[in-house]
Image (cartoon, rainbow, N blue to C red; front, side, top):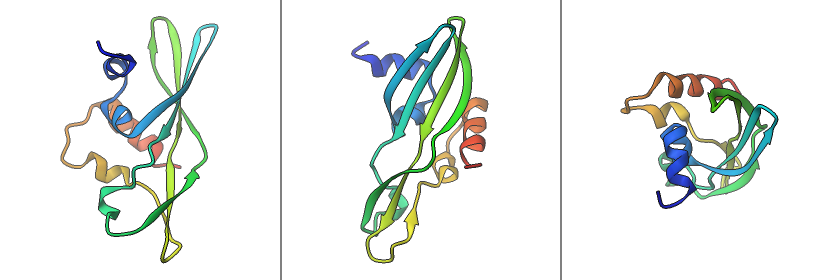
Length: 117
């Protein structure tokens, strides 16, 4: 394995590796907290617009499968952008990300959870 990214790919869904950066991890007794922020790469379907990053939505926390006896929580911050011309807020449509792919039950559950916010 070349780096920590290869290891993370074995443990986490591929879409997290593709769209998010691991910015922090914290181990507290039997609990592991992993903090992710969406990369500043605007959605492809919005490529005709000039988008400016305007921070993140409120962090959501999702309990994931245990790792080596530790409870795992994913803390996820989704990015939002503003259209420079219209001022409209734009965010990635996670349903489009999943189209045409075979997704695991875990991935589908994550999308369901993340789309509630």
